[in-house]
Length: 417
Image (cartoon, rainbow, N blue to C red; front, side, top):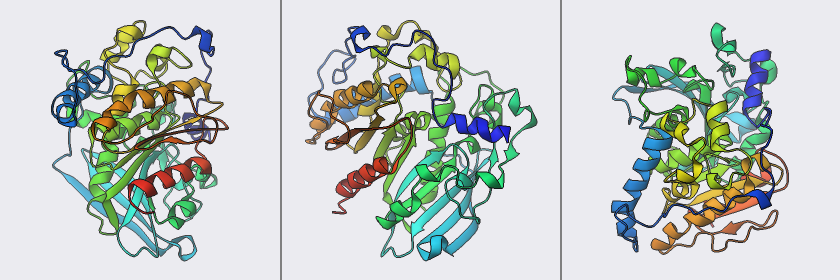
């Protein structure tokens, strides 16, 4: 069961935090964020057209080349195979499907729940999971995943089939019945189906098919971009399922997969809403604050997540031409929601809030409101409009409270209330 335990560690910050980590606001250095609404030429961005046609491509290219890497598009050969169908799942409350998505030499298993009583195509929440699709639900019909450990040494024997005792192990993070009761579907893929999450896991994932024996370049796509690519391939399927409203798909991610959801939303504008939960450094949190996890921590502990180019900033964060507000801003004018947890200081909740607030001026170009304050809200006091934010009590996790806020947010922006 050791391989399962390791995967469980991946779901949170269950590793030793480096000595000297800053958790003192008085020690946050003074910083100036790079200009979000100024072209490389120095010209101010004053309208949505200039943002859309000129500044957004500049920002996307910068983050793509320096941080996430350049990923390919949809592969010309891709197949969808319905591998299981249960029309009366969860005691008759849902239709459950498992779909094998095969592309670029890899097969990803998509688990999809849809409300049984839907009167038309259903909006869907889509997200990657840490432990396998079987861990999302206790339903015995869901296939047990082949799970990967965290380190190259432990992965020498390859992936192992998860144990029956792990079924439903992550169900608290995926309240399927709550989501269905609000009229939404839920789609999820085990992220290691796309690429295992350890340094060296690339050779077992989708990227080698595109590299075709070439050495990695400093701006080649890294693991987070690969996982985001996998979310886009899930979206390819959802667009072809008549029971899904593909114009109303919200992509959600937690922790490292929250970083992934932000990049997926930036790279693929088919995602109608983007949700980032406890994404921290490399996600929604402002790197220049040097609070909790920092760039050097990321690149040292997880060198496979980001590009080779990103590593040049380990000791030079202030010299980066970008920060989290620029990543979040790429999602405009689509709605985005950033969520934090009070005890998750490693992810820098204040930095996550400030990242969302600093991105909000992009939405104003479109006549929309983002977060209209720089004052950190209290616990359980969501703020914002097209850019939403909350901080809740508790630890680095996904809770029913989080889902309740995301569902309300989606209801409002999808016109469901």
